Length: 115
Image 1 (spheres, helix red, strand yellow):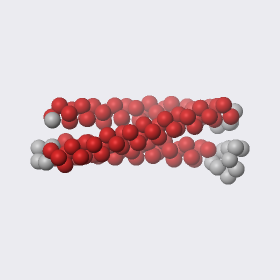
Image 2: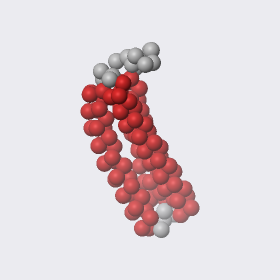
Image 3: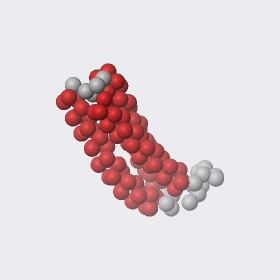
């Protein structure tokens, strides 16, 4: 659906892209925290670097998630016809991503217990 405020801009595709980028950041965070756990017994400095990179990826996911929340809210204030659908999609996606992020944060807590 085209956004009248920005000719040629596909609002739905743009939001879907950002939602997918949140998933990519979370996947990266998971990869890095798992690497931190596996390298911990061998090389603590390297493991700590992986844990730090994972934390950065979580921050990126939070930034993008907040951006999507703002964009969806803007659709409502603009009276955009795709607001209702995108709001529902975002609530579902955000809930799934929050569960995934909580699992990764628990891995971070477990990692900190090892150090």
